[in-house]
Length: 127
Image (tube, rainbow, N blue to C red; front, side, top):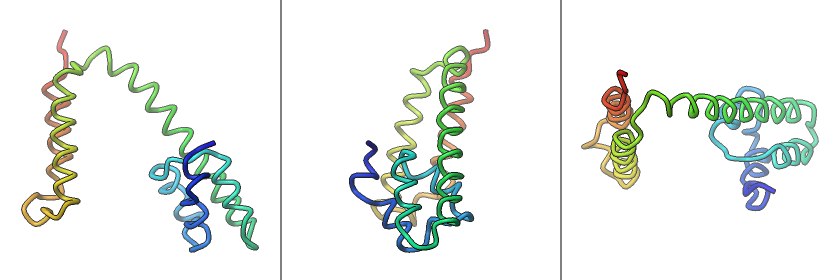
């Protein structure tokens, strides 16, 4: 059982009307949930057909994202130096945390992405 099934954030999204076909891909990529939580949210309200379709799309998007991450992650081990990349990923996480903490005026929104991209470039193995 996934955590969203226990804490109910998928049910809250559904009850607020945010689990729609338009937002299915976003929910599938950002809310860590299993198919059980999404289907239970889809059938918990009267307009089941639209919510069931949205939950199905969210499940497919989430499954494809996990599959792509697994395949790309395995391939990334061959050509990336993870020791270097780990340092840049940590710096990006600190920057994101600082933006969330309220330093968003001083830290540009593009800076964490730029740090990750520079980290990928510098950790690339040429051999």
